[in-house]
Length: 111
Image 1 (cartoon, one colour):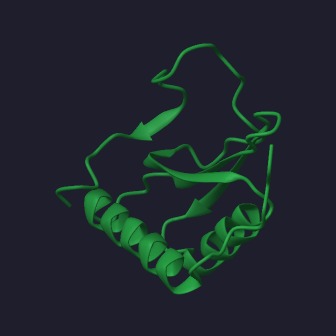
Image 2 (tube, rainbow, N blue to C red):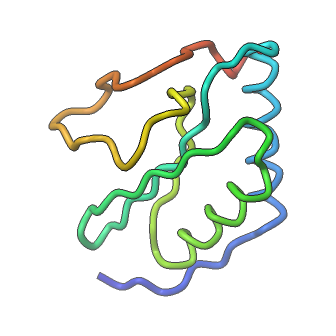
């Protein structure tokens, strides 16, 4: 596989992360609703790294997303919050769409 370093538009990444955090804050409306997850998957070996961020921690999530992207990872922000006390990566299971450890499932689209 050819893993040329991607060109990352840091301003666009920051805007996207800010939007997700703003929508999450609106959706939970002040409740203690857990944390957001950044999921990074490397296409060469499908290794997964999961990082968690408090709602409003835009700077750290942005920098981590950019850093993972620069090393060839596909980077995703989950559209849900999970319990704050989770540690490590979730166990790998076959099949998509499994619900593991969600705390809130409110729509960020309509917040």
